[in-house]
Amino acid sequence: MQTPKVLVADPVSQSCVDELAAGGLLDVTVYPGGKGVPEAELITLIPEYSALVVRSQTKVTAAVLDAAKNLKAVGRAGVGVDNVNVDAATKNGVIVMNTPGGNTISTAELAFSLIISLARSIPQADASMKAGRWDRKNFEGVELYNKTLGILGMGRIGTELARRAIAFGMRVLAYDPYLSATKARSLQVELLEDLDQLLPQADFLSMHMPLTPETKHMLDERRLNLLKKGARVVNCARGGLIDEAALKDALESGQVAAAALDVYEVEPPPADFPLRSLANIVFTPHLGASTAEAQENVGIEIAQSIRAAILDGEIRNAVNMPSIDAKTFAIVKPYLTLGDKLGRFAAQLAPNRNDRVVITYGGKAVELPTDAITRAILTGFLRHAGGEEVNSVNVRSMASTLGLNIEEVKSSEQTDFNEWLHVAVYSGESKVSVGGTFFGAKNEPRIVRVNSQPVEVTPSGVVLLLENKDRPGIVGHIGTLLGRENVNIASMSLSRDAAGGRALTLLNVDSAPDQGVIDRLLAEGDIYAARVIKL
Image 1 (cartoon, rainbow, N blue to C red):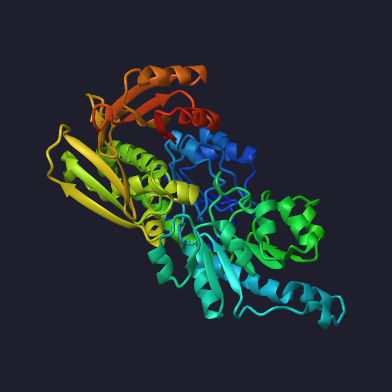
Image 2 (image 1 turned 90 degrees about the vertical axis):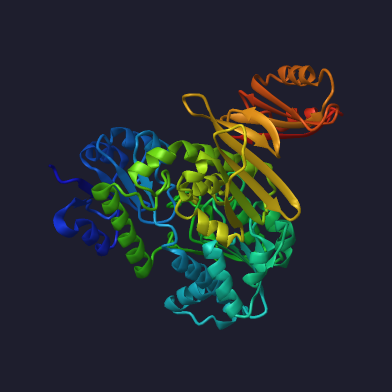
């Protein structure tokens, strides 16, 4: 039997290489040069390898994955998988694994180091001294004590940063749409509901949000102008959270006194990067995870995950698969798909900030190993909050970080279904819920409950959820209105609380109605609410 081959494409710690090669069970090749493998060359190399280890330099594109005839696993020695096409990997049956949490401390410490650097102009003072000058008056700084730090995003890194800031006597304000008030109190931070309320109070601002369509350029020209004049801004999270052109204007005008960036919209930034010309900005080359300890930790962790996957068939720290053995996976696979869809549905039905999620297993589902299914539900639910970094490995930790209590219930309730899952999300006194099961010999998933009302919906594509008055002709009226807007209905499910009362209408549609269509629906007196849910 041929020894499985592993390609280490990017620079990693020697401990990673040693762990991979231990016992001679894997044939390990380290790509030379220390700058990653170009796509064209990787396409020619990859067919002979069973596993690939990368950091951030090498891009694992769809073309690479299509060429990878023997590839079983890609290991990312770090948290983000931005440089790996996860969808293409899944399509090609390739496990993608990362190392969640491995660089939490190193990134939090870098962010705090940059805050101190901005407060005291340390990089600029150092450069001045090296140029032979003695410019004490030009580098008068500010103290951190009694200053206000705004943290955008209270995940693992934001939490660690808050602890350090509090130790320095700073007041910490937090903005995180998914952090519970109880969790915020335990962290000794002040949670603000509205980002626009936080910005005018912040002397320092540090970004720790995932990059999603909702967070891209969240710090734009308008919000930069809402900051307290002379505030200082740090981004060690993801390039794209800050509009770099707007930041340049704010730095030049003095609206922002100084900024520090470790991440950029284009990495590395081009030679003509406009921010390079400014004196009041500090740059580092994406050093968040660049400590000996972090690299040692993530290197060993990813090596162990690769060995487990290739040699034993055990899945750890997987982004696109649950971490379970192959036999169990075959049993629970349909439930993982249904659970993910129920989580996504519930996330788009619920408000952003919630207290707890109750997941109920009924019928034959009570006999299943529930952890992987619960993780699939939570991954679907929290992906909107945490972006692509949320996976089945770190999702429980993320829920805990957000102060979200998770409850699992095995129900003996008798229903019309042999097996079913139900997800209820609580926010204060309010509750939303969605339930699902399987239909037919092919075990096709269906959503069969929404907010305790019976429905039948295919959980895929776009679902338009309407709350409307139950009256004769309303179905035709809705169909006519959507037809006029060129929105085609694939299927429809109707439910009502009482004749002539409040009805629930769910439609599988071929395309997502835009806001204009939603506004026109709501302008109709008999339609009380409309929501587009993308599955």
